[in-house]
Image 1 (cartoon, helix red, strand yellow):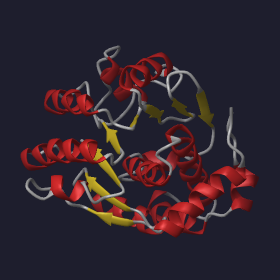
Image 2 (cartoon, helix red, strand yellow):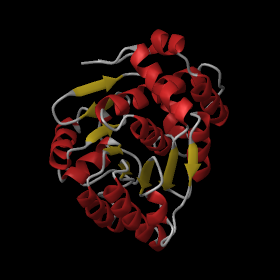
Image 3 (cartoon, helix red, strand yellow):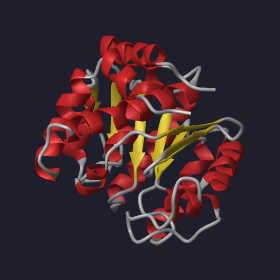
Length: 266
């Protein structure tokens, strides 16, 4: 199974046309980049991340992102409140288990959040293996493994929680536990800016918001669009500093012709 450039473009167009409201409880280091990435896609980002507001807001959002990059006490409580409300209201949510495995507080929180059945789990190979119980995590946010190293763990995690799992790496892997897709697009400079992986989680949330009945295809389309935009941006940037704004522009301007010219998916 694969997606055609027109499949990906149709989902991207749907996101732009619908402008979904995406709630983010996320890493304090990258909130601005997440917001700009969502705005470039045409979405409405909402960083509603405090208790007593997060749960009520999650019921009205089109999708919810939980990113564990800086899990201070208030965002931890807000995350639990929000996923409970999102699950009750049928709002799809995405778990980004940043640095899980190597750090105890976020690891416990991630396991508790998993009880609420995320639609998508997105992480690097070390994070995915740690969450599945087959690894100890990486060096903070740095991974010590490849997406193929994490393939079995990702499949197990997907089947156990009835979720789509997206594993980021030089080659990205998307699996629902039965079907796998690999996206061989992207650029190393995504690992040289703040939020390169975190903003992918927000992008995935936006796509799933518009296609929750087919989350596997939605996630694969999101990963492909994001990675192709990174390639396009790198072609016009001198280094990581100029790459970041060029990436936001490339995501905003991404079209079917560019997707068709660059897509490398199998």
